[in-house]
Structures are given as structure tokens and as C-alpha cells.
Length: 197
Image 1 (cartoon, one colour):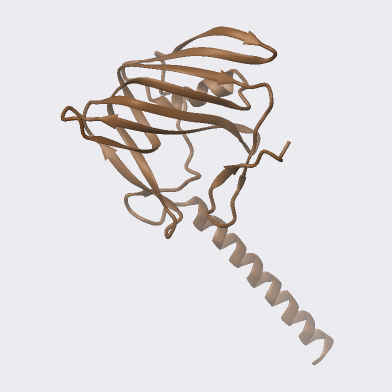
Image 2 (image 1 turned 120 degrees about the vertical axis):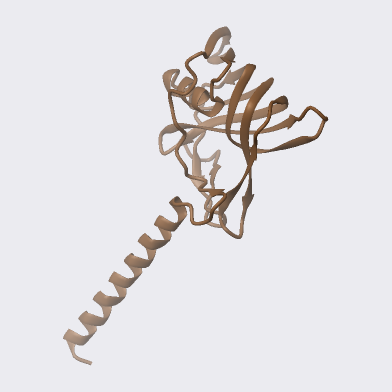
């Protein structure tokens, strides 16, 4: 095989590999299936104008906040705005309240996407627990919840969105040490890696 043929073969192989990597990356960030959402979908900001908060205590860099969202506020947007404005790099939170509507999801490993489960009725928030960490240097809110319908039926999952009615009362602990998420090769999800500083 001539030097030119070897060069052409190597160049073609590298170009094909780069194309395959780029195609795979695009597939990871775009939704391919109806009724599903990408794990890397962006959260809209500015959708919680009625949100109020108060710093309750601060001790050795640990801050405790009370955060209240008002009727019509969208929870993921409000918490993302709060985290950015207050430079939150790691936090945990719990909440109670109610919603006029919401969308929760379940991670479908076969599609590597979240299956969306809309809730199109007023529901009571029976439990919400979540955290805030850094993804590529920006705060990312991750929360799960369960909600109850008027007949007591409970549904839940990973929160995509939730519209407050009439209130959401949330207590957040913000920690002084940053936590980072890294992409998990097996699932494509961004997962906390405590070793990353």
C-alpha cells in the first residue's frame, strides 16, 4: 500500500469517527420521540415573578432560606433564577404547596430520554425533595415530587415543570462547598460526582 493510500485511509477513518461522535452528541441533546424530553433540555427563566425569599440563618457558610412562590409561578424557573442570583453551588430543599398543573417524568433508559406525564388538574403537593449542583459551571435544579388529586390518587416523578396554585413553601439549605455533575457514560445523564472540585 502506498503512502498516499495509507494517508487517505487514515484521514477517511478519522473523519468518519469525528462525524459519528458529533452525530451521537446531537442525538443526546435533541428529543427524538414524541411525548419525551431530553435530559439536557434548558429551563426557561423569568417565569416566577411572584417568588419571595428570606435568609433565615447563616452558620459557618451554611445558609437556610425560606422561599415562597406565588400563584402562577413556575417552580423550576423560579428555583433556577434563585440559584443564579444567589450564586448557589450546592443545596438541598423540601417543599409543600399545590399546583394548577405540572409535568413529571420517568427516565426511559432505552430511549435515554424522559417520558413526560402531564398532570392537567389542580393537585396538592404531598412531597418535593431536590438539590442544586453545578453543570458546566451553572446551577442546575433537580427535583422529584409526588402530588395528590382530589380523590387521593398520588402521582409523581422527576419534575419538568409545575405551576403554583395558590402557594409553594420551600425550605432550602445552601452549602459552602460546590458540587458538580458529570455526564454518566452508561445513561447520558448528568450525575453528581463528589470527587470533582
